[in-house]
Length: 178
Image (cartoon, rainbow, N blue to C red; front, side, top):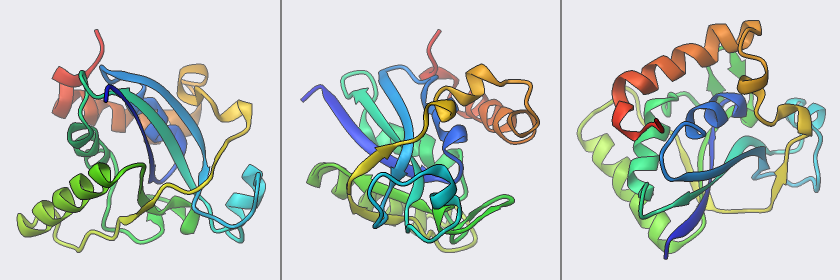
């Protein structure tokens, strides 16, 4: 297998999208919604918290250039997997930490990584990342796509996304596209 897809939730999808777009081997990153009950939810419905969806990114990657385990290392480095239904000031189930796996291989790799990080006490608090089979995925509205690239000077981008990207560059420079 060369091309794989996974779906990840780690707070605001703008943050995840901006980080994963910079990685070697990543073919595409699409912001959207997953894990809820409403078909074709809108951003306003998801933000209201009643749909059960998480803000997620669907990442398509070439596993010959970027293996799933390394992708998860980046995922865990750019968000806090120990805060239930929250990332920074963003609060609600739509901001939960979640790995929606697309194969048994991805599930096993995610379980191993969570167990290893727990054993190594990487964080002082327990990891609360949900691990579930990939549900229906609904792409977000067009104005959410490539948000950071189109709005780098916007306040949220400067205050929240730019520091995450700086952290990514510091920890994983070798994984970034030239």
